[in-house]
Amino acid sequence: MQLGRYRLDEQVGQGGMAVVWRGFDTQLKRPVAVKVLHPHLHGREEIRKRFVREAQAVARLHHPNILDVYDSSDPGSEPSWLVMELIRGTTLRGFADAHAFDPPELAAACLVPLAEALEHAHGGGVIHRDVKPENVMVREDGTLKLTDFGIAAIVEPDEKFTATGQILGSPAHLAPEIIEGKPATPKSDLFSLGTLLYWLSCGQLPFRAPTPAALLRLIMECKPQDPRMVRPSLGDAQAGIIARCLQRDPDRRFASAAELASELTAMLLAAGIEKPREELAAFVRAPEAHGKGLRARLIERSLTRGDEELALRKTSAALAAFGRALSLDPENDRARAQVERIHKRARRARLVRRAALGASLAILVGVGGMRATSMLRERRVEPQPPPPVARIMPPPPARPQPEAATPVEAQPPQDEPEPEPPPAEPPPSRPAPEVKPPPPAPPRPKAIEVTLKPRLPARLIVDGVDRGIEPMFTLSLTAGPHRVVARHECCQDFMTTLDVTPGTTRYPIDLGAPKPALVKVAGAPANAQVSIDGSFIGTVGDLERKPFEMGMSRPFRDVKIKVGDRAGSGRLEAGRETTFDAQKLGGGR
Image (cartoon, rainbow, N blue to C red):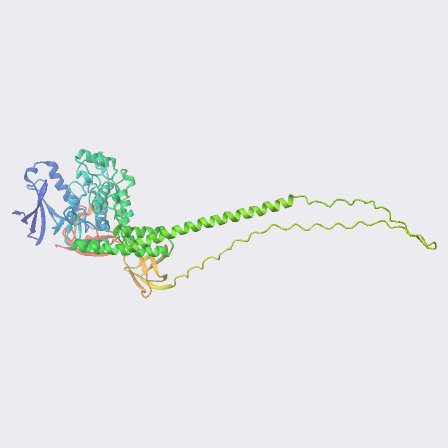
């Protein structure tokens, strides 16, 4: 079967609206996929408009995780068809039904490229409105492709997202505001991503009911079961991300798909997954073997982190790390022993605190008794000795005196002195409590001189300290984990935990995902069409109103650009705007 220059070789898929063929572009000599509208639907104008809408939506997008549309039929032609990139693989629905995303971090890794693809679409004024597993293709090399923008809400660059909401798309993945008939917004797609993450993480949808009406009521209530109750091995951080995506109020969801992607990346980094795309690709190529190996690595990472937190006396963080290891491996003896050790230490600490409290109370009681005794002594009136009493003694018998003697005058008798009362004994004093000296401070770890080399000259923030912008950094860091953030204008912030070990002095530092490159064209009529690497990206006038955002897989990309009948080549830089002068391009190509 032939459609113009496209040869249809084999039917590879069929839906309620169209048939998908594996085909061949006889002009460009490449395999393609051709979606052909069912003949009995051609007379329905709304269905034909969906075909045109899909072509228009994807034509303005160019991202490594969005399926490319190469060509389409004229609006009035019969049959209606779209020519797309041919994917060798299966849908996410088919892949996930055959292979569980175990450990659950693989589900989060799967969502990172999809969130980035939606951020690119939202930046181009396109809301997907039908994010579901059937609309995600899993290529054999592990690359994900977001497809089927047939019911996308397309918004012009100078408009806001005010397209009228309709109940279109898969009910199980619809956002509550769409069900209510409110306008679709980028946050509606984030809700759908949340249902997708729940499904991949738990193996079941967050909202399930026997009838569509009951299902819509459940979504409107928006009270899904806690995913950790469905799958105990799911981490708290991942459960929190799911809960935020599935908020009833759009304002309580993530602000953008970019924020969601950043949160997922940070969570995976903390778990020990630094390159989510590579982990996902390896899982797609060998699901069972890679899933088992990744689980073992995550358990070891949790155990190591728990030991590090214990060394820093961060008991709560250590318990969380060992608990994560036990959730992945309930029979792990090392994690269980460490948890029991922490609990025993906590019990001993409680006993010591109680004993110390008792001793303190005893001391307070003793001090209080001493003070009371002292006050009583101060207030007591000491007894005074009674005044001396004159005692009347009988006169002594008269002695015969010699006549010549002179009479002697009698002396009055003298009182004997009263003995002084003995001094009062002081009350017995209590011995002072023994004060133990504080334990010696642990020796400070020795600093190691290390070299940090970013992929490009970038700003490094190490343990919260801005180290400036350099092509290479020489720092003195202690052995152990350090938080490093690499920041470059071309890429998203890259966050990692750097484990400094003795004997290793050089550490390469990666950069985050490249930002889109912005493309503008000057020196050509406003209606001149612009293509990059064979894909139409708009007219010169379109790019003047809003520069085209070209998805980038690396900081630099050499491209071929065509403006009208002029063609040439140039280089795009991630995160920067490049203006091509059509007058400097070659003609006649």
